[in-house]
Amino acid sequence: MKKYRYITSKRDTMGGAPCIAGTRVPIEVILSLLKQGYALNKIEKMYPWVGRDKFEGAMDELVKLANDKISQKILQTQATA
Picture 1 (cartoon, rainbow, N blue to C red):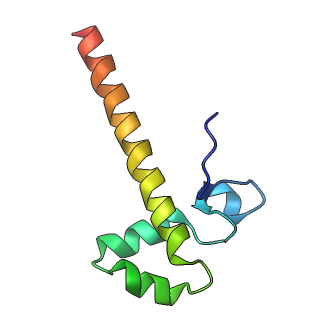
Picture 2: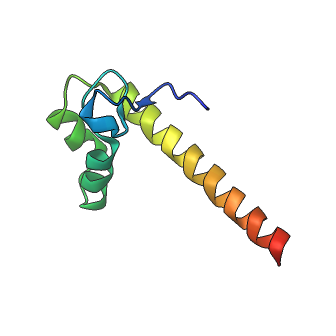
C-alpha cells in the first residue's frame, strides 16, 4: 500500500475518513469548500493550525492519486477493447 505524507486515514480518527495528516480535517471537507469557490487562503484562515504546506501537499497528493487512477482505468479499458 502506498504511503502518503499529507493524507492519512485511521480507523480511530474521523471514522477512517481521509484527513490532512496530523489533523482531524477531512479531505472531503476541503474539496467541498474548493468546489463551492473558496480560495485556498480563505480555507487556510478557517483551519489556521493546519498550515499552507499541508494543504498544498495534500492537494498535490490528490492530483497524483487522481492521475494514477484515471490512467489505470484508461489502460484497463484499452486492454479490453
